[in-house]
Image (cartoon, rainbow, N blue to C red; front, side, top):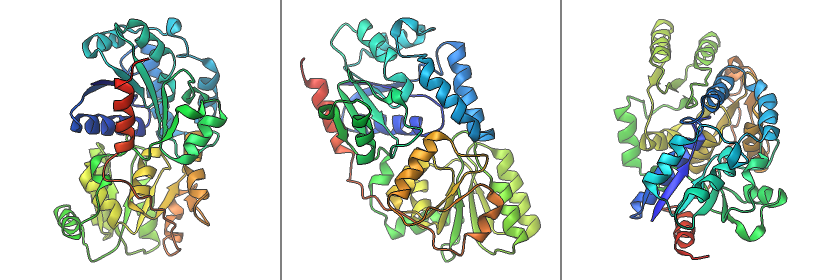
Length: 369
């Protein structure tokens, strides 16, 4: 069975879920591919994607305005108004999918309709929403009553979809959609081996500084503040693809006598062990990072430097509903003041595999209208 997954590089969570689903789908003996209609389509859509990522890194507060514009502009609601679709059409011709699934709110309407118009066979459509809870950043574009299935990552996600008009009988709580290592149980031997390979002292606790897929972080500010406050804690800083930042952090640690280990982009296995080992995770409340922290039960402090995006509020609402106090900072330099406090964590138990979602997709693909 062939699955076409619609995603976008806006943020990092969409692509993370798309790649995770593709990997699981193929593990079950199916065929699939990922298509990014906004990134690969009309130049204005590409610019919009790049602008979103710029906002996320430089001025998250501005996304309240950008989000509202996108909510009511209806840029991709109708197939006839979507521009620059030649690459999308080519993808459809090559894949000839039995199912089309979107992990992005703005790919759930016009692109679904366009795919169904061009498909030589009946095409089922599915929405997978990775938002963790309701809130001001829960886009109305997630809701498409004509879709065959709305799969949510939590019960709160599903309830939000029903309240906004998704038919109850089409809504299913399928749980978190993550990379395969996060569905396993931590093994002490493998965890310690991973830490040794990364040159992390497993005998000492460490602070894990996360970075977004597009480079959103405040690592240098945090490390300077730790040095100024005399905090002797092992710091593991994830730098993604930013080798300049990695070198700056390494040089700073050496010059100030701090134990700073700056790491490049990590795979799923490494992230799984890091999140199971860290005494505290500091990062923005994006759905991707937050979901991985939930799967591992990692204590987390949220970085709200530069403001908070509407979608991030959704994820913080999930935490607020389950812990007495959510710790967050508008100024990353204040992090040392919170490290001696009790840092909240939430542990969500995952099944060995995302069998419910895969099973629903398989059943839907085989079902005749």
